[in-house]
Image 1 (cartoon, rainbow, N blue to C red):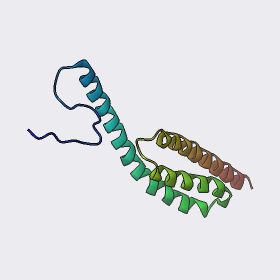
Image 2 (cartoon, helix red, strand yellow):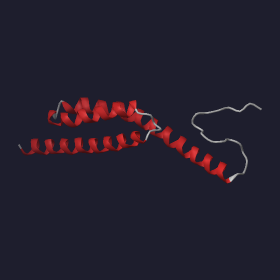
Image 3 (cartoon, one colour):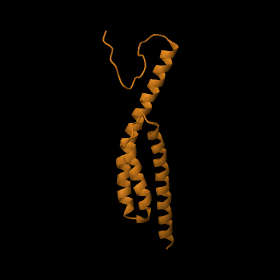
Image 4 (spheres, rainbow, N blue to C red):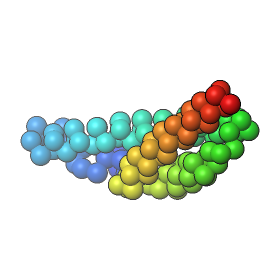
Length: 115
């Protein structure tokens, strides 16, 4: 029987009812699913966020510094290995930057409603 080696599966893939093997395979299953979902979500978020920034910056150029940070983080995430701890850190920074952008956008909108 030919054994297929997959880079995503880092442990013995035999079906032996060995506790260590079962735990390792469970970890691999979760890591694989999480990484796949992360990539899919990022690939959906990036174009949506870039299109939103392009459209909304025309209305509120005051938010440009946040937009630059968001773009930088999007590309940094894209250039970082999904297996790296930095990937998650960059995603957290992106979430914060997006929230700050929206907060600033709301402030600009409130100011224009008052004035």
